[in-house]
Amino acid sequence: MTSSAVAAQVRRASLQRTGVDVRSAVFQGLLALCLLFSLTVLVVLLVDVLLRGLPVFAARGADFLTSEVVSQPDRAGVVQGIQGSVLVVLIVAVTAIPIGLMTAIYLEEYAPDNRLTRFISVNIRNLAGVPSIVYGLLGLALFVGTFRGLGIGTGGNGRIVLAGGLTMATLVLPIMIITASEALRAVPNAIREAGYGVGASKWQVTRKLVLPSAVPGILTGVVLSLSRALGETAPLILAGAVLGSYSSGDKDFVEQLFGAYTALPMVIFGWTKESAPEFRELAAAGIIVLLAVTLLANAVAVYFRNRFERSW
Amino acid sequence: MMTTATPPSPAAETSPKRHMDIRIETRSRTGDEPATRPAPVIQMEDVSCWYGDFRAIRDISLDIRTNAITALIGPSGCGKSTLLRAINRMNDLVPGARLTGKVLYHGEDLYGPRVDAVEVRRRIGMVFQKPNPFPKSIYDNVAFGPRVNGVRGDMDELVESSLRRAALWDEVKDKLKQSGMALSGGQQQRLCIARAIAVEPDVILMDEPCSALDPRATLQIEELMIELKENYTIIIVTHNMQQAARASEETVFLTMGEERAGFMVEKGPTSEIFTNPKNQLTEDYVSGRFG
Ligand SMILES: Nc1ncnc2c1ncn2[C@@H]1O[C@H](COP(=O)(O)OP(=O)(O)OP(=O)(O)O)[C@@H](O)[C@H]1O
Ligand SMILES: [Mg+2]
Image (tube, rainbow over the protein chains, first blue to last red):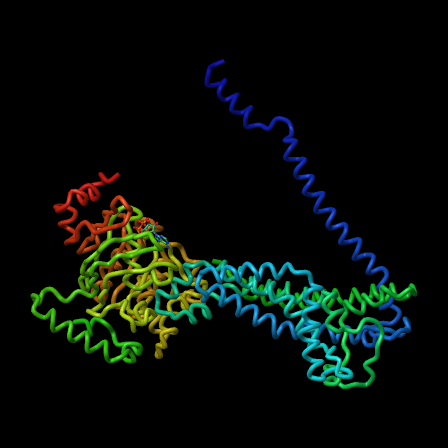
């Protein structure tokens, strides 16, 4: 055999795989297992909820959505919960989202990069990690307290949906600021310089170049904020949402706005504490409604995010 | 000369009268120079730039000739970009950057207390090393500058004429609504040039505009520069000695000292710098003997 033939054989042998790469296979298997585990948990939860909740809809249909949170399981519904949750989300949407976005714009685009700015940024991150019950305490002292002082609410107790909504707004504000800041920081500096290079002012660069490029990331922050506001329960317990059955009677919308309120997670939580087994099913049905509302809110934000999706 | 070179724009009409007075005064002062030498557009006097405590360029004094192409050459890190960005106050945007000395534009101190950096950048445009079109359509890329500067009138015509002057019109006239980012690198750079000239600047700064381009696109840009110099003053940073030799009238050679602060070694007509430099450092650099 000539030496070049030997070389060719060696080359072929080394190019052809011999045996299995055990470590790589094991690692890949482990990753798949983790995925499977999280998926299983999710699917089990969902199936369990659907199995128990769907019969309620089958039996009562839309009646469940339009009935009040009363103590008789066969007549109880979630209408006040839906109203309360939708109002809380709206309040968060018109307060925390614009304030959070503008804070982020200030911190990222305008504030000088000094110790104070960095101190503030770090502490906003810390605030995002504060347990939600602490925000509940804040809401109780600040918002419920203020409205009580003003004599608003049932018997002037200050426990109105505005207090709950504002409490949720303070809770999601750090999340909104952080995600919007990150979205702004991800916009390449070359785009800003190009704008300044043709004589645009800081405001024009921010408004016409940076913000449009950051929209997808900002809307991710909106999705996170709204989902959080819909799902949190603990702060609302303190911020005056009604736990358990109550009737709004025939109060009109404005009267309800300044009267007792509740939210979907509160209703669900209330039902899970009841001893009668029928309430378990109601709770499951309530969870389905909550999931649907959350998905709907997110779908709107995702729709806008996809419309603005840009690449550079 | 200057007033005919700068096409009238609304921004120029609204700028304070003060500018005009000083300009006239400056011209009469330099009036006793030979008529063949128009007053320089940019004059730098003892300019030093710092990034924090680090001095990037040291005591640079030079004049930039009107309606000519001036090339800035020198080793990497010697401060060519810094010098260029000092001219249109782009370094203002870098936190901690500062400048001493004077940068005069038609005799006006660009770093004077009441000077508006935004207006400076409109009059002294810039093309960057990496093509950086906005994530917008080709049309909007060109129209952005005029729009933010409040230009009224026929935008379609302005976009077309800017793209024509940048030698890009024929390639993009059927896809003006497409994203500027979807063009090739060379087309993107010409789009950036069109964007820069759309605001009718008087000086165009180019920081290695051809470093990402193939030889053909490079030649296209060079031809374009030579056409543009009829109406504009161009300052170009380049690492390509042939490019400097081919395209420029004047060449400025910078290098850096021990403490890494860049300084100017010499400046002169390009032909002299390349064939008969006064300084040994220049000769070593242009003949490729630089470390
Ligand atoms: N934003 C900045 N912050 C701090 N230092 C900087 C900054 N920009 C540039 N420098 C420093 O200033 C010096 C000059 O940089 P500059 O970019 O002007 O060099 P250059 O001649 O353009 O180099 P090149 O040919 O590689 O582009 C370098 O030492 C660089 O590290
Ligand atoms: Mg450079």
